[in-house]
Image (cartoon, rainbow, N blue to C red; front, top):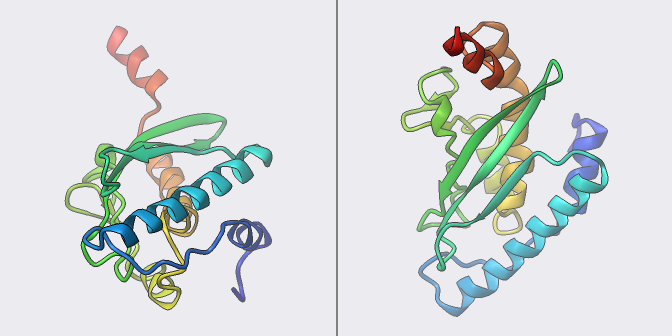
Length: 174
């Protein structure tokens, strides 16, 4: 954690680490892992809300907990940019991190793969591998999606690639 800013360190230390090494094909062990995932997500969400830094909503999209969806947002120049968020839990989870998708941004930045999957290869995947199985979905959001949004959304807005929903509705009305 050398070189990390204090708020990231603080956030990371408050997200519970997970202990169960289980993936979607591991039956009862996967159920235990999902319980740990929910505990970590609840802790992270609670911490964000207490620091007035609420920036996502997420839930399992299927009963097995292998598909997740929700919304995330980023505030830039006092305007909130909101995006659909989704990902599947890989079969090799937790050894392999989930590939987070923001379908609305597909093709708008070179730091994204086909289908709207954000690029986490260089910075986040080595960190995930080093901390397997202790990291989970909350850690992927904290250390993967949050910094990606902070780096990419301002560039996309300032370059005119991403428009605020109020700007789009006013231009279509005229």
